[in-house]
Length: 433
Image 1 (spheres, rainbow, N blue to C red):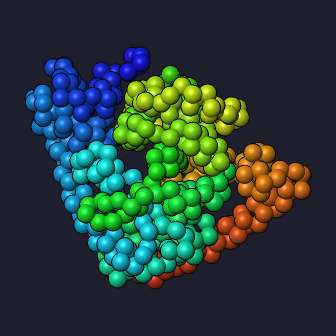
Image 2 (image 1 turned 90 degrees about the horizontal axis):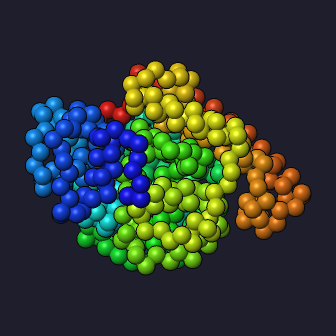
């Protein structure tokens, strides 16, 4: 690590574990560890399986309560990797037979191809990317395999098709979920990802003994960065803050940065020129650059200096930086056991309930008044007429989105009421893992 972080010993250990978990010679001193705190940090950041690789070498004496917390996550991930792996294998073989090219995103792909440990971080669902024209065929295939619209809380497919980036399907017991992506983010961002080119660059490969398409290194790196910042939306605004390492732990995101770091170590011959070119063409410069800066600074990721020179991060608006700081402070307050803002707690809690997450509304506002760079990327011109045209298009899209949110929200409300179920937006899944 390039410099020492101002962290509690257990927090520093979490980063040290992430950095050295593969090193057979790594033997941390665990004599004076606050085990309840350390176990909570590890499990909050999905690191129990990774930590187990280190514990197997040093064989520490872990108190029963902390051991139980860690073991429960390990067992959960082992069950999840087995269950999701079987479902994914069945889907991939059937999709290949029906000529539905499929890219597997994140969890299981990372476990097998990057970590070489199926239970490392299998995720709560199976994320796949298909061409938009193949989504309906993909949904039909999954339905035949018993994976369909079983969760009553879902809005209708039309809503997601118009305003989102994926459809969701599950088994009847809600224990296996697929997210069928045709995009990496919702339509109301300044991203201009060329999805067809991702498929053109992808190569045939195998995963769990089944055929897949595997993204080229630059596409994989950008997809991971976009997904990370979709959740850690504050990062581009706060990347230079000294307490970013603690914010990462508070947000439970350490493994997301390790994913990127491990991918970079795996793809030692990363085509950085293409990566830089795609980041610019997709409008993902701030996203990729902020993620890479964190991975380089705190995880020793192998990123050449020329990349940062080519991808400078835009200076955020003062109001954006302030609001992102508020979001980070709320995460820190919860992590440190302090009383936070009720408003911000609601805004952050609602992230899982709404397509356009409230914390991302500032980003959505920029969609109305975008940079010339975005207009050039999307329309190949950035004159006043184009800017005006885009404003009215964005306005119409927003009105459509507002009406659809009301219409499909009411449809969901009355459907759940007829079934005698709660119509709350914050309903939780009831699964038996």
